[in-house]
Amino acid sequence: MRSVRQVIALSAIALLALFGVTATSASAATQVLRVGTYNGIPGQYATVDDAVRALQPGGWVLIGPGDYHPAMDESGTQLSSDAPAAALVNAAGAHIRGMNRNTVILDGTLPGSAACSSDPTAQDFGPLDPSGHHRGRNGIETNVSGVSYENFTSCNFLAGSTDSGNEIWWNGGDDGGHIGLHSYSGNYISATSTFYNGPDTAATYGIFVSNSDGPGVIDHSYASNFSDSGYYIGACPDCNAVINHAHSENNALGYSGTNSGGHLIIKNSEWDHNKTGLVSNSQNSADPPSPQNGLCPNGGIGPTGNHLCWEFVNNYVHDNNNPNVPAIGDAAIGPVGTGLVLAGDRNNIVTGNLFSNNGAWAVLTTLFPDTGAANPNNVSNCHGGVPNTSLFGTNIPCLFDDWGNQVLNNKFASNGFYGNVTNGDIADFTIPPLESPGAPGNCFHGNTKLVTGTPASTWPTLLQTTQASCNNPLGYPDPASTAVLGVQVACATQAFFTCPSLPQLNYPRQTHVVMPPMPTQTTMPNPCSGVPTNPWCPSPFAPTAARARVDQPGARIPDAVRLTLD
Image (cartoon, rainbow, N blue to C red; front, side, top):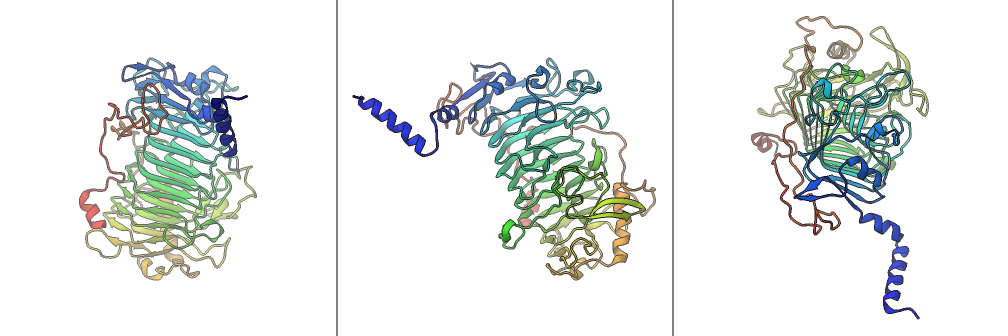
């Protein structure tokens, strides 16, 4: 006869099974592995590498303050699908959390180096590929769903001959043309690099999400000094993602999103001192499937009550005039002095933002000429675009028109000071779509100067009159204005020719790359919150001594400006 205790135990197991939870998964969910020392209490592991290798699905890795140099790629035992990962998380649903965002550092430099050193002799360029070139390295990476990264800094993982140079990466099958990763989250995370010796080895992406359909949230984060972009979400027809309380500065692009559509919200964030603030684009030669389209799937309703689910709202986009940043590839031709670019995009909404001190254009809606070779993983060549066109005498394998975007009720201050003929707050370089005849043009209304409340400056000059109505199939700029703007955009990017320095073709060029240090960031108020009981966190919500808070509002809009916006 079973004892009462046995009956209770068996009943508990039966209930777990009933709700789809096994004894193994329940045990894994309470696994807490500790790295380093916290509040004088040592953990079980000295290195992040060993803890990540031992991690089970649903488990936790807590990392005490310290400068860690993970090197799983150097061991030869674990490699990600396409590039070396210094810390590769294979456990689905795992939590990687530092105990202080500023002092827990995953560092790509060689062991023994100063934290995030810029010294050339301190850099680790990764193992050699078969041709004898350094492969580069990625920082912390996962290719499984449900992984959260929280409360740490990653720095100086550099590019090489493979897809590398990415600091914090949720990788669902980079450039593979399919969704390979679902839910993810990042909170109180920072990514930066201090080393530059040419674009080929510069760190590439800061906070990077590829081929994921979410739900995903990145909150309270920072990225700087990257040759492509500080933030990237791409290759997701319905991304189901939110970026909130981000700060991105001193990158080629503050944010980049290729073929990222459906549910995607970027809000309450600051984008400044990049070459170009943000670029969302359609593209055939990278991160399929194309094109980018912000329509809600299945005729759904978006956050503003229409059918648009891609939204850029309540952001502060300023001073994106910095050519002296690392830059490579398509990111290097982002138009200097521009706040937000929608390039070959469809059906996005930009509303309630402040754009200031961007020298060329605060907002530019434009077609996108993809000059790269077709991606072999694309569903069909030039899907959503127009194949084999010509622009400025150059063959364009795939041209993506843009339409259906709505730029509404934003504030503008001191943009367009380069003084070229089309420069100002808003410009629309669009032609009636060849691929989708009858599609509505982009629309613009309610956009005003911050101080005076008068209409924002535009090119064409009557843009908010002629294209004020949304869903208008005739809402396109006149060809003469489009031609003038096209030359200006070509000069800002130098994508097709080297633009002469003339009074009406004046855009700043790179002189020397500067890699500013990362400022101190807000750390998680209570790093023990939600963690299973362990020696560092005696109870799930125990207070800790490791606060070191720095109070910085998400978009860091000056108080006077906030009052005006309100």
